[in-house]
Structures are given as C-alpha cells and as structure tokens.
Length: 103
Image 1 (tube, rainbow, N blue to C red):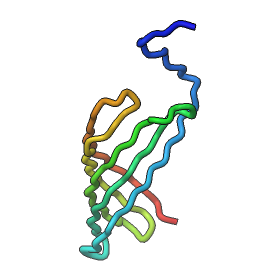
Image 2 (cartoon, one colour):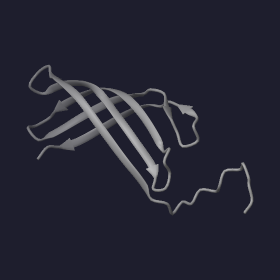
Image 3 (cartoon, rainbow, N blue to C red):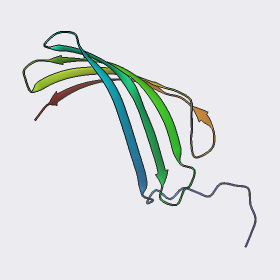
C-alpha cells in the first residue's frame, strides 16, 4: 500500500447517476406565446463517488405554440456557483433553442 496525494485516474467505464429537478412558473401572454421562469437543480455523481457534482440554475424562457401540439422554445440558463467532484467552484450559462411536440 502506498500513500499518495495524486488523484487516481478516472475510469471512463464508470456509471454516472444524474438527477435533474426543474420547477417553472409559466405565464400565458397570448394563446400562442408563453413566458416562463424557474429553477433547476442538478445532482450527478459516479456510482462510488459520495461528493459528485451539485449545481443550481435559474432559467428564463419563451415558448411559441405553432399548433395545439407543435411548439418552439428558447431558454437562457444562468448557472449559479456550484461544487464539482474536485471541490472547485464553477458556474455556466447556456442558451438553448428547441422544437417539441405535446402529446
């Protein structure tokens, strides 16, 4: 047995467990146009990692309903400070554009 302070190499065959919990408030501005805001919590870790990745995001978005079932949406996600498996602080901001179908 050797004692070392070097991190062990990551095994890319490890299983990642992830849980994402979004919560939104939606305002129907018109029949076809919606505005929403909310938060999203993400927790992800390797199976044997007790620290994992934990972050909290604020989300603003708009949605346009082309038909009753078909829609377009755009979201801005502001990542507040979180902790990664290396215990470093980080934050991320993203813009996403999507197309969807409601069943």
